[in-house]
Length: 128
Ligand SMILES: *[C@@H]1O[C@H](CO)[C@@H](O)[C@H](O)[C@H]1NC(C)=O
Image 1: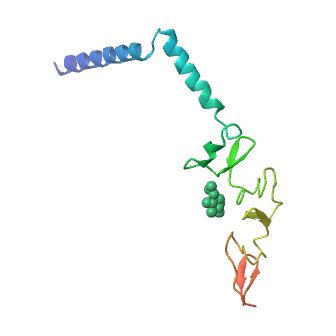
Image 2 (image 1 turned 90 degrees about the vertical axis):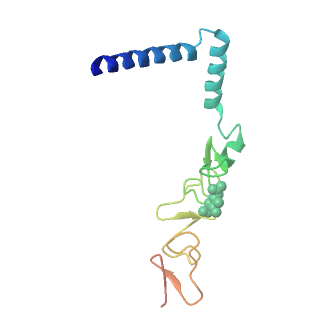
């Protein structure tokens, strides 16, 4: 009895799914066109054409380099300007490639400034 009841529920579920699939997928040409236009526009929304996409929340940065949103002040491959790559061992801080092992303003990481009495040695502000 329980088994039959489950079978019945399953049949109802399948019928329900079939009906909703039919309802969603219209044979209607106009609806198909709208759907296709929507999908193709999504693909075309790149920052080279629409710079605002880089300003939305969650974007990697507000700058646009070759269709990609980047942060020019911190991106090691686009440091200060598009395509400017920092050489090995350097990091991008405030749009400049710096050596974090010895840079007094960006010692070890961006913005870690050593104070007047210390100097940046191997990426640490050290008192000599
Ligand atoms: C870019 O990076 C800097 C430094 O981390 C940060 O202050 C700034 O908010 C970033 N900009 C964007 C748009 O994420």
